[in-house]
Length: 188
Image 1 (cartoon, rainbow, N blue to C red):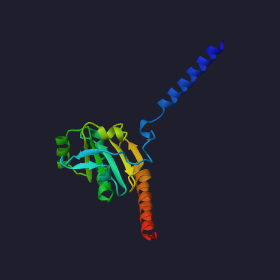
Image 2: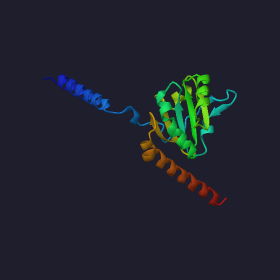
Image 3: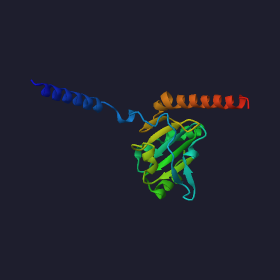
Image 4: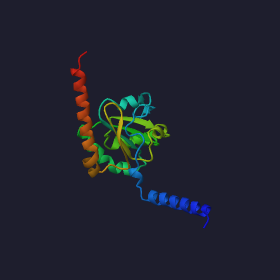
């Protein structure tokens, strides 16, 4: 066996190993390069009022969720009761209505509950590209400064909320409270 054949065999084995590892990775567990970074900027119309312009600043200022949804997404409808519980519990939820028809989305919200405080209308997915949206639903947790601290690809579940999302929100709220107190107590 020549050296060339050994190198080719080793390269093939390495490639097959990477492919095998890739098959075992759940796409929902992919780490997001945006976690730990500021929410990407956007300028979009409000879903409810096309004359109102929304930006990432409308999502910032308190610990909040950002949910990406569409009416054509049956999984989005399935997770909505959990979002309603979170909203009733005082957790602000902002949203991107993603690659949807405005009239269809408004009709859907008019006949069902609306957990969203703010909805940016993203009909062609412009903001979705910058936010790294793979599919709907997706959910982000933003801290009070607008830094993405968590991203979930796929639907939220009660267990996921209990194990990951709600503890993170509590921790981020405590951090924001401490930072606010430190600013008030700091000498001027």
